[in-house]
Amino acid sequence: MAGTLYLCATPIGNLEDMTLRVLRILKEADVIAAEDTRNTLKLLNHFEIKTPMISYHEHNKGAKGPQLIERLQKGETIALVSDAGMPGISDPGADLVRLCYEARIPVTVVPGASAAVTALVLSGLDTRRFVFEGFLPAEKKERRAVLAALEKEHRTMIFYEAPHRLLDTLAELEEIFGGERPMAALRELTKKFEEVRRGTAAQVRASFDGQPPKGEFVLVYEGYSLEAQRQAEAESWAKISVEEHMRRYLDQGMSEKEAMKQVAKDRGVPKREIYQYLHKDGKAGVSPCGKA
Image 1 (cartoon, rainbow, N blue to C red):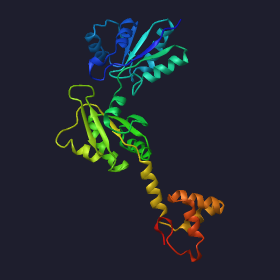
Image 2: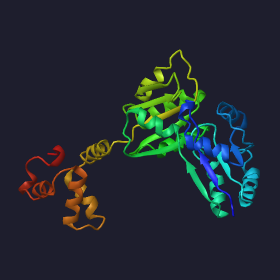
Image 3: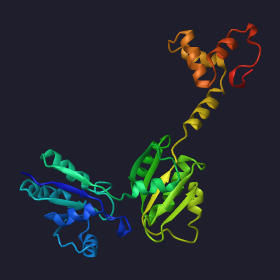
Image 4: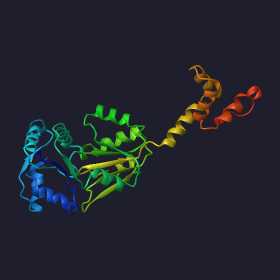
């Protein structure tokens, strides 16, 4: 029978976050596939784990992936770990999982710390709905294209960012998303000098004045407000008359009743107000959204 691939979460900073189950799996596995064997060796030495390791990372996954699948098919148990946190998130672990499913090899997760979720709940922003974007592209044009596509994203957004690109990214977030939305920049999560900087993108950026960013950051950014979108749309429609608004929908083939319903929805007013305005003798009075 084939062995099992265990996706083992490791601490993102504080070694006390290592779970008992992860410790057991790392000790019992035939081999540990590590993103950086030197980094993982420090962790294993701390917990006196002697299990042999093999490197598996972005630059060798094409060759090492099939080798690991072959070992699993022979019945070996493999524990996959990243440098920190949950393997498979912003690392090639996801590729190995896909190969396992294609080869009908069992896969399971031994959960633990995750920087993205830890930062989200620590940020003070909305946690009900969120989207994880990982590392933004390093190339400026591609990065701006990704951010532009996220401009109207309603969910809270989570990004990873390197210190040398942080200030540029914050400037682009302010430019593309606008300067009013709150955000948080977090680093050293779970460690002694854990840091959370909250405010707008401009305020967070200014907080690094004379103090260059250090360490990897998690950026948590408030999503685009549905209320703000509705208000912006209503303000846009208010720039034209109700009659012109109606004509746009009538020209699309809508009936008068359907057009009035859509106009009322666009302007955020009851349908009867549109009806009353359009059917007043001489169009006297004030129209919805302040049009005379």
